[in-house]
Length: 105
Image 1 (spheres, rainbow, N blue to C red):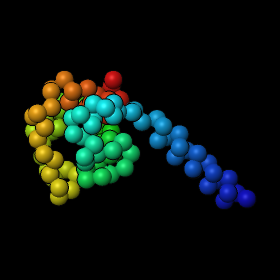
Image 2 (cartoon, helix red, strand yellow; image 1 turned 180 degrees about the vertical axis):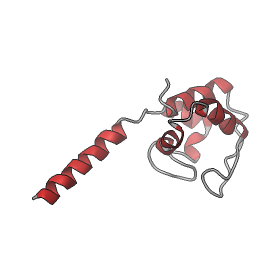
Image 3 (cartoon, rainbow, N blue to C red; image 1 turned 135 degrees about the horizontal axis):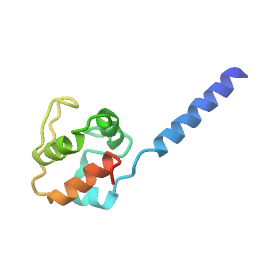
């Protein structure tokens, strides 16, 4: 019985914690090309938005770093596959998405 209660408690915690993550503007993410490689809570080619938040949530310079990384692209942080530059995406849209990922908007 104790195992079942613990299992249910852990499952409940997982549901609550996943709902705590900020939701990204899916239309803006699609128009910007983000959804080809990223999703809210599961890894596709690149990390999920939730993983990015977890990695950088305690970093005071994260927003500026991520805006630069999304704009210029890069590699080596999340594995072998490089992130392509996104200079075609308006700077305001990149900032909006990064702020949403980092729960600041």
